[in-house]
Image 1 (cartoon, rainbow, N blue to C red):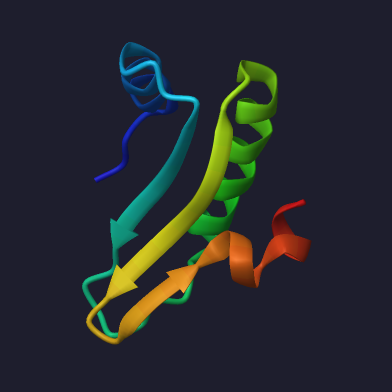
Image 2 (tube, rainbow, N blue to C red; image 1 turned 60 degrees about the vertical axis):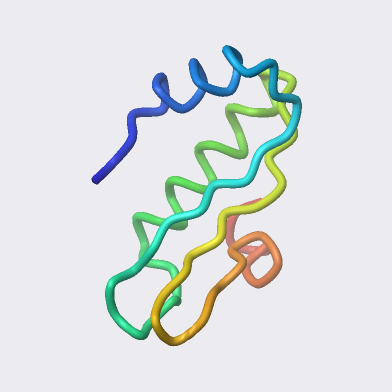
Length: 78
């Protein structure tokens, strides 16, 4: 399931959010981000700079653990 960016931002603004974390699951034991996960994170991070929101992290949860994209791949998404 992919949530459109507009839906995400509408929800954030309707809650008067100033900061947020994106969390989703991988059904496998692998919590490593896919190429699509990294692209999504980079695009959301870029959009939030224009919208005045603080994007704290994108976390992937799997049966094998969890993965913080911003903590582990800063050089890929900056």
